[in-house]
Amino acid sequence: MEPARRSQTYAETPRRWIVVMGTIVAIGPMSIDMYLPALPAIQRHFGADTGTTQLTLALFFLGLSVGQMVYGPLSDRIGRRGPLLFGLLLYAAASIGCALAPSMEALIGLRLLQALGGCAGMVIVRAMVRDRFEPQDMARILSALVLVMGVAPILAPMVGGQVFVWLGWQAIFLVLAGFGLICAAMAWRYLPETLALSTAVSVGSAIRGYGRLLGHRRFMGYALSGGMAQSGMFAYISVSAFVFIDHYGLSPTQFGWLFGTNAAGLIAASQLNARLLQRLPAQQVLRAALATNAAAGLTMLAAVLAGLGLWGVLVPLFVAMASLGFTFPNSTAAAMAPFGDRAGMASALMGTLQFGLAACSGAIAGHLHDGTALTMAAVIAAGGTGATLLLRILVGGPTPPSSPNPAS
Image 1 (cartoon, rainbow, N blue to C red):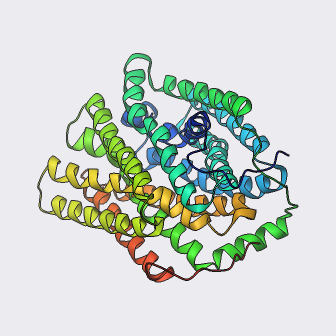
Image 2: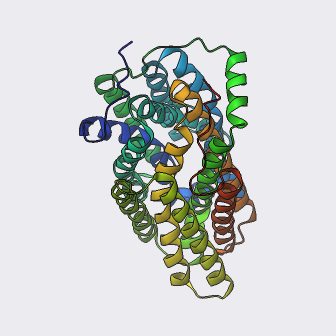
């Protein structure tokens, strides 16, 4: 295998590499966001209730969570490229299946399979970044990836809305299949192997490695706090179409613009984060971002309870989503910092924890959705508050002592 370039810096990184990596990671938001404007229509097409329709999201989150547990150790053992290409091709095939689904039950099952393929890119991209960079530069690279992948949540709901209007909801999944094939072609052409030396990873050693990671307080603190903050975003994703289209009366096109505006705020914050990291440690920026996320969520919940209307929801929602542009890269870099030799495993467990929380928050939001913005606001507020508390409890003060690497 080609030796990993652990000493590479942010300034030395080819922009093409960042674009390809960011595009592959964008499979997640593309798969989630593109079909959101069509969710009410899909529900009507199959004659399903809201809770059953939400399973197309909840099971997708579950697939993202479970699948990463397999790809992580596998990529540590045989390399990054093979599992990545397999996952992308599986994703494309499952997307075609979604377009041809004859029932809601079939669509739910195929969405699970789609996630099991798409999650390969998410876990392996993080591992490839850790293969090549030290933690502070890793956080800057992840911020750059957000700039690329962030185009997806801006364009996906708007493009999905137009595809739905002109061609129907099935065509959305055919577009996703094409996107998966493009990602596979780019990975084959532009992404060399980054794992310096493969390591024998049996099922038993993988379980023991995950156990040591679960007992590592700093890893769990950063992974869970990042996951709790993002769980609010997935509650927003799960019910926002019903809240803003059905409750507030926005059209699918207007909803696409609203969704894109929030995504643009997240992207702008991620680029500001890259600049802040030239002067401040990632952990310090993360703490401020989590506090902001919690405050915005609580403000939105208060606005909904006070009946302040659409703008009372939109403004704090924008702040809450923008704050995630700081939390994602910094929590990821801080959690994975000690685990260069098990980057795939650490990335997998972190992704599993985070998307497990996402699946729970999406299912809760869908099950308790009462037609208003109340459930969405409550889950976002709980996620931000819980993230802040978890980081304080598990990691402690702003400059915690360094911990040994338990996965080595």
